Length: 304
Ligand SMILES: C[S@@+](CC[C@H](N)C(=O)[O-])C[C@H]1O[C@@H](n2cnc3c(N)ncnc32)[C@H](O)[C@@H]1O
Image 1 (cartoon, protein in one colour):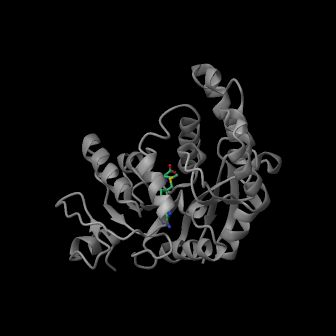
Image 2 (tube, protein in one colour):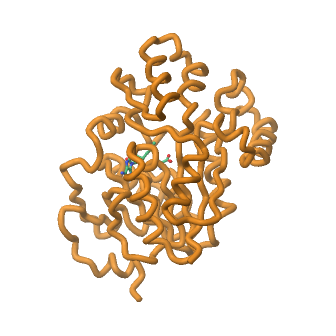
């Protein structure tokens, strides 16, 4: 059977959902948005290319990469990074020898991913515009799929399950899913840590988040994020199981560290950083810690 890369090589560029390979460069992204206009507008305002470079973003990235390293099969395996944005995870994985395909609905993110790939001389197997709910990928193609973004931007459970079932469809048997969620309690802690809590408008967002998990940002303040669903840890596990996954583990990415008052001083000291990374790994499965982590990652398998 033809691999996904071979299939891409043989495909003429189809319809208005265009697959973009590095060489030859053929670019024509969908003009109509695949996602809601406020999510699209948010990603025009904030830089996903830089969010995870330092501070609390860096702990999120390094901890996520540590989780990936423990659960991914060795290279060369086929990975789809769905919601891959500017390639923060895709590019280092490609550098490690994986065949990495990046998919994202936001044209700006695809441009950023291409620019970073070309600047760092890393070749992604493909960069394509797409939506996690409808993946233009044959069945049984992937050894692993990263879903780091779509689950919190899909606000209806039915859409999240559809995305998870799509991932299961494209995974090979024994393939592994990594799915990120934002904790139900993240905005409460973030508001306290970063001083947003003084704003009554922000406290209104927190009230809605805690009640329903439905995060909306009518203020359009870029640091208050955008339309999203914030999971309880047990909801994330249940959604993965309901979509047919087995061996579901939900892990705390940053634990409670990111919201601590002295976090940056600790993080910027190499010895303290090393200890912190070890402690966070040692508590990542503690049920009492999960909700205090801004980000959760579900690791789950297709076992049939
Ligand atoms: C906060 S960013 C995370 C980017 C990166 N994966 C990371 O973990 O840092 C969320 C990403 O999900 C993408 N996204 C939102 N809705 C999506 C959907 N329905 N299907 C695929 N990607 C989606 C956004 O365009 C954005 O790139």
